[in-house]
Image 1 (cartoon, rainbow, N blue to C red):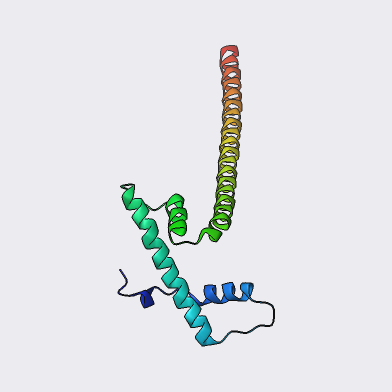
Image 2: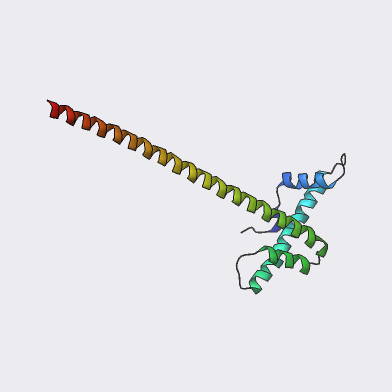
Length: 146
């Protein structure tokens, strides 16, 4: 576990990307300001996590879920973020559902392909067996003729 909040700073690249997306084009930010925003974001995440953890503990659970985070946002009086957060959560769930369906479809296609290959292999084996039997019958006929 980290000893203090300064040990839990978010990656600078992530913070820089978020800042650039939030500011108009051509506006620069000093290293000091970027550092302050990074620390503030880290503290916000820690506080939100702590509040969400309280809701999970009240529910006698050890795992935080999306409802805990939404409840924490309301408790922290960040109601204006609840709607965008729900939208982002719905988008994430749709994306995950799409990935799951794609994965399942690929698995079905692979199973179908494997099954078809096995059928073809069986047909080839059967054809070879038929050819051997015909040869044996011909040999048997030749031996009888001799």
